[in-house]
Amino acid sequence: MSVVSSSSNDAYPNASKLCENGHSIWIEQVNKLKESLNTLNNTDPCNIIEHFFTQAINTEFTSESSEFKNVLKQLLSFSVRQPVNDSSRQHAANVLSNIYRYRILNQIRLSDIRNHAVFTIYSKCGIAVDTYFERFSSPPGSAAQNNDYSKVAHGNAICNAETTKILSNILTYFQFLKRVNEVKQQLLEVEPTCSPSRLNWMGTMWLAAVKEKSLSDLIWEHFLDLWYYNEAITCLN
Image 1 (cartoon, rainbow, N blue to C red):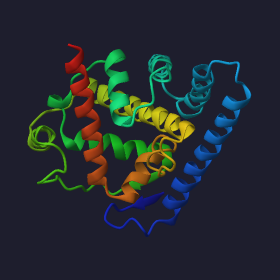
Image 2: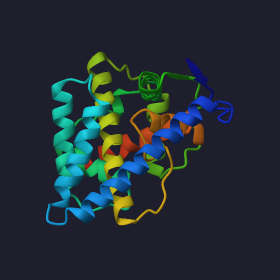
Image 3: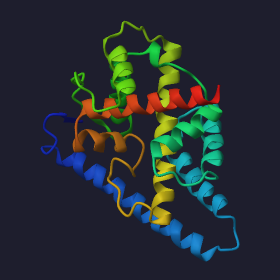
Image 4: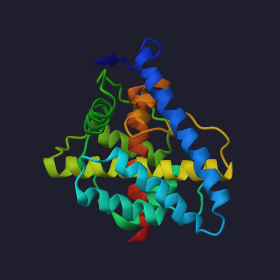
């Protein structure tokens, strides 16, 4: 078992190799997907992309419940038929809020986000991340985002077992949907390059994010995912 410190991200070659190898595999598979789309030009491209990600679901989520995978496939089917969004976060928020709708920002703390992130990294990558993180005193978001971040950072919410499971589902579904949009960007060459933290296996993306920046930054990114998701639900009501 390797340990990654969020304050010293250059000293863990095993983690670096894992992140780079996963990223390389995904780049290679996306290139093959692009070839399939060019070759099978009489087939609905949405069906081809959906099949591509269905195979990823079968590879990555073998131990998850049928209910979890059914929701994921429902999200996938909706996602691939949406226009490519310049913001993968906004794309994920729009799709997820249409199918899986829970408001939990006022029921969690930043440590709950942290716990899910480090557990996922360990379970998927076998690497234990140093769990220490800093709560940003001056977050780099909008006034509304920073205000809500402060409430989550310094609130006294108690996340019970049911809320913990919902949080886990939201963050996993959200990351999956962001990756769908990233792949579509790659296919259309909207975004010519992307980092291992944006295109990789589940868990490995978050490990790469810790290495590229820090655990504190990863938690901030997850908070923003939840914030955008919450806003998207509000817009639907």
